[in-house]
Length: 418
Image (cartoon, rainbow, N blue to C red; front, side, top):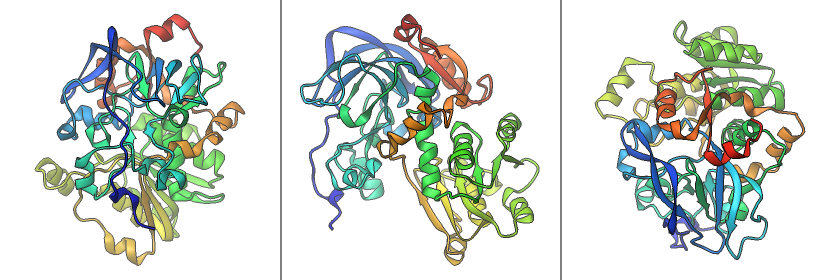
């Protein structure tokens, strides 16, 4: 079948149709390491399948830091509304919304998918043809991927949900109904963190009895580790990081900590697991540079991403094993070990989460008490303090070491349990 992403297709409007009189507070990108809380017009219904969600809780994703830190400046415009992790209540729906109604408590998924194109029909929602008009991405990759809330104009320029209200296109597919009695931390963790982590174990094909290595012990990395062990039945999980506090968290969950400030992780793993890992998962992100060479190349603009952690994962993984990339890589890298990858017959996969594919399974896991994702939130703060929260998350100084949940004025008024 021909690749439909090369064929012109209807594009979901990314226009921000402002309310004529009402305003709201929103977290806006105003430059490198600068996010401010601004007063902007409240969004309104733009298309028949839209919904407007009144946000109660939101948080900052590690991938938001790509825009905050300056790596994505060419794809940003001053005033862009940030964020793609939020929950709330449906305030208004368009005339063609069928599954969602006003008053429903909902989780907003990050990926904006049409549900009708070739990729959506294959449940590969993050590869959607129709929701991202970005020519920049098409020129960069040869194809467009899906739209994503608040994630630069590379993914469509959709206003994000770090705001008091958010317009949600194709609401029947992009919103998940959430039980009223589910604590906010669990519900919000299901918006992106748990989905992305599950995508990682799916890409790596983690199976019962596997030996798994996860590069990164942030919220996503720790979630991958827990899902690999608690849900997929991995025999051993190596947790690889340089942050001692996060390594201690991983160890408390039953993982085997590997401190990269003391050992070369690939060499250490092969010394204790001569067979190698069955599955290696990179969840530390493209900013992870260990070698001097990659630090110099990134600093001088000779590469955009670093292959240090990917190289370690490929080397530590057994012949015929799997390596998954879940930390965001956008651009190019040098010295990629293509020979090692090919000769060891390793399967390498990556990509953005296919969020809609994993529901209702993930929601049921949490509802039934089989998995608790709320551990990723180690601090509670008011939405108005989001500029300081960006600074803390960027410098990894969030109290408790992981992630803050932010409560909007509407969320505080409702007084829901966290």
